[in-house]
Image (cartoon, rainbow, N blue to C red; front, side, top):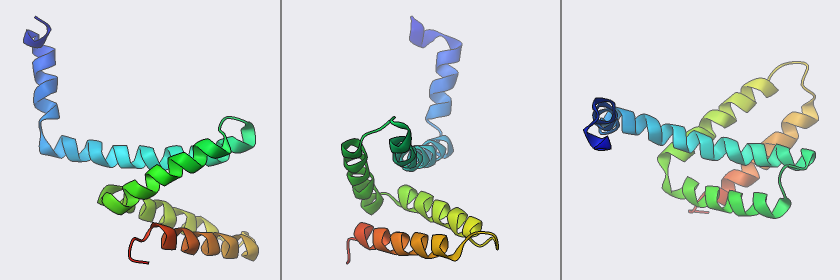
Length: 113
């Protein structure tokens, strides 16, 4: 019935393509990381709670150890933040604070340390 429709058949073929599946994996990793940042900023606006953030980031931490896609997404976010912090009008204490926390968080997510 519904599976015999041509549009459903074309979508199933599209979803079975390995390139498309890889794009979806990348998108999933990016969404997981960016939702975590949304939750952090959301605490200032009353959208999220501290307990929810802690639980979510523990899940992301486990995903970071297992998923190269999530690791690559964190690398990209780190590069983007570093680029933004290199502007001359950014105060030095903001750079130092970010570098301190990024080093601390990277040690937490590294299973070897």
